[in-house]
Length: 480
Image (cartoon, rainbow, N blue to C red; front, side, top):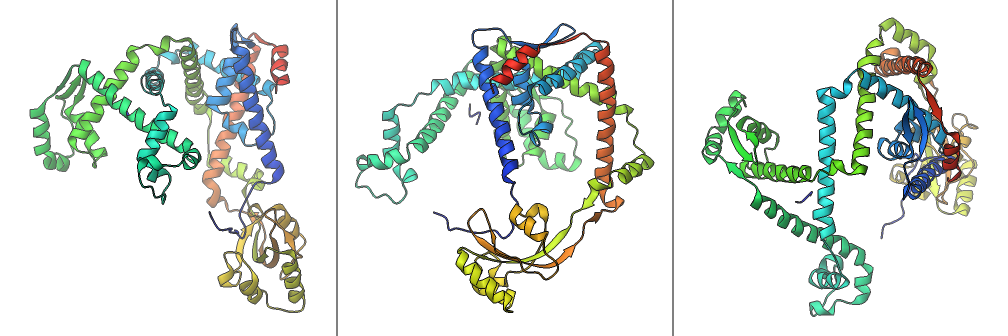
């Protein structure tokens, strides 16, 4: 089951994050990692700690962990510098209120919810089957690693000439040991997968209607011209599961590189794996049962907003134009600067060049002769950039310059030295409405959704009994 030395280069103006922004993001992800570790350790040997109750329904550490690791809370990750547990718990409370409304409305019985949940459980079950039957059944010893290296040393140590495979030196083996382990594990898992699939094949009841398959092959050109893949005859059957001729034709159109036999074999193997995974009822295991329940809640929350909240939003041209007029700062086309630069690696070289420029030397000529940046062959060809493209030292320098000015020496974080010439400025201005209409529409729609949702949640909170266990939350925050 095949669950199948560089030279130093300088970019003239490469965008990168400011140091404090990088630090904030690193601190945030470290906080998440520490929290997840803390939750994992605290959960061993004890019940899931309750952080809040929503009409008697507990919001737990497990819910928080799911939110942080699986849902990712993408709207928070871009700006958060630290992890605010209380804020996350409040969002989980909001989510739970919407889930209760969705269940009351019977959305948990919708076919699309059931199908999505079944697909999720199947996917997770296949992952667990693969772990049990493939990953955990493969063992690799030190002797295995050495033997594999001797047989395949040219793959890991190209250019190494040996008189015999027995001569593979230990020093080379130690250097590439991790790569050998990965390659050998992949090789052994493939062997184990093939072996396991043979076992599943042997105990399965598989029927292929060869006459129908031959007819489909012979009639392929005619079918493609008519484009009518409506055949309902069973083509393949695996333990009661059927692949119809129409389904087969559809798959063949999507995967033209595969032969008919490949498509059928792949379908059979997938069905065998799915059936075996489902037969083990991993969904009865407490951890998967809990994760599946949280996934269902997530589906219900999304579906409720889609079906109940979003239809209440009315988007008109007049409302969008009014929104655009009151949010013009969000639609500013940033100022652009036409910049030419000279880049050198030594400060004394930069000082000499700057002195020559002050004495009237031609900037482009010096750039072509002295600069080491990638545009040197074109005389340090000018480029248009925005401040977002520039590191802080250059941003600060640009603010002090006018047309035609040459900057003082600017030291970069990569220990290079640059001299900038400002050739032109395109001042910031509001982009025309027609150019940003789509983004205005999306922003207006989102604002309306958020406003409706906030009002709706506030009303739900008035009619609900909510208890927040601040001591438990403080205990988690103290562990960060």
